[in-house]
Image (cartoon, rainbow, N blue to C red; front, side):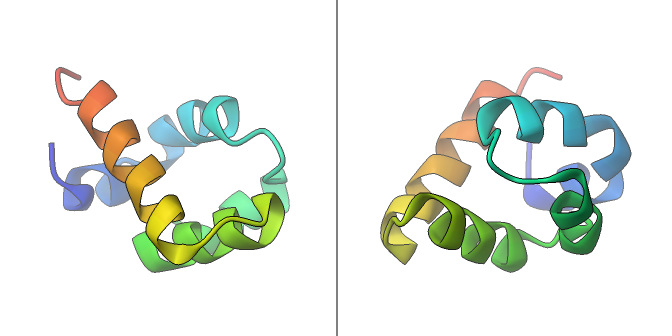
Length: 68
């Protein structure tokens, strides 16, 4: 699955994103609106991780949701 699919179905994926990164608020998820770069920035901010680590986590998330 590519990120375009996730972005296009953001409302369906928000729950999965919230489950993965529970520190992200509903308001923050609305702001992100499926934009990968904004998700990465929000993960960095909320969890104090590097950009590379945030991207690594997002890639892992994509892999887990490939079959859907």
